[in-house]
Length: 328
Image (cartoon, rainbow, N blue to C red; front, top):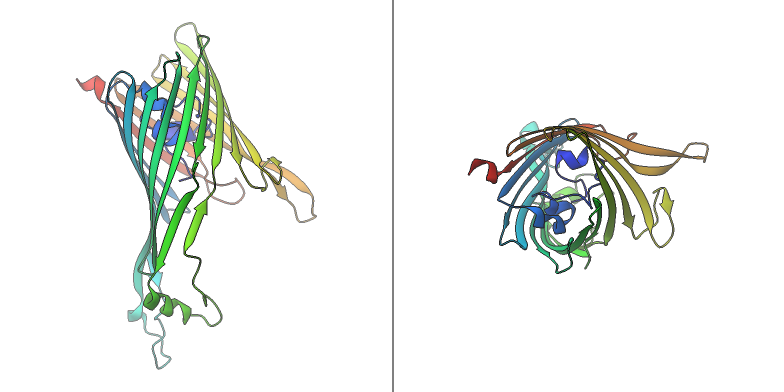
């Protein structure tokens, strides 16, 4: 649930809390859903870690009236066809490759979103209710529940502000284990996996605070600049970090031509990395993207990374959005 959705947002290093205004707002800031004027559908696919893991996303949004909108989204992150070699050696100590089986591990996130305009001009709010499902073959599975809340405000000078509070009640996951399947793992390697993991898992709240300004040049050219501050209530390697909270900025730009072609770039994930000589150096993650819009069809591409640039491979992300108003 932390990776992000929509290649347009990923190409701007996720700096979209203030500007998100379509079906994908259910993920980034549900308050932005009030800008959806007709039904919208979004799809995205990406592969990570040399195509070992697959990340898929689908979302749908529809206005209820001129003041409120609802949305639904589904995220799946999975590694399929993992070799289970815990039974590779039989009771006589012989290696038997016929005893190898396959299993998959998958995480699912289902979100229901609701957004509404407030009586104050330009001020909107939105909430998410999330259901988390995690499956690790027949070894373990969990159910989880959580809530998000967001607000957006836009003034008359094209300044936009956004606040997204994720997991505001702490998202809780409860795990259950197949003891027979665990016994196979427990005996596979002596001295390892001897105890069951904890049966509960808590995701602490996070804040994403955004500000954005849009510019129009000679009618055909546009520029959108956005700055987000990602706040986590823990001490880590973020560029600004204390025992109470850490703050990680993200900066994104979108250049548009005739409201049809878009070029995007961004930088984020600033980290203080400890070097082998105990010194610290600053690392960051750049992102790039392209977009094309024709009537109600949006096709977007991003070249980005889910981690810092030194630890994980960059991935190609593609997403498609359909606005049904263009087909009526």
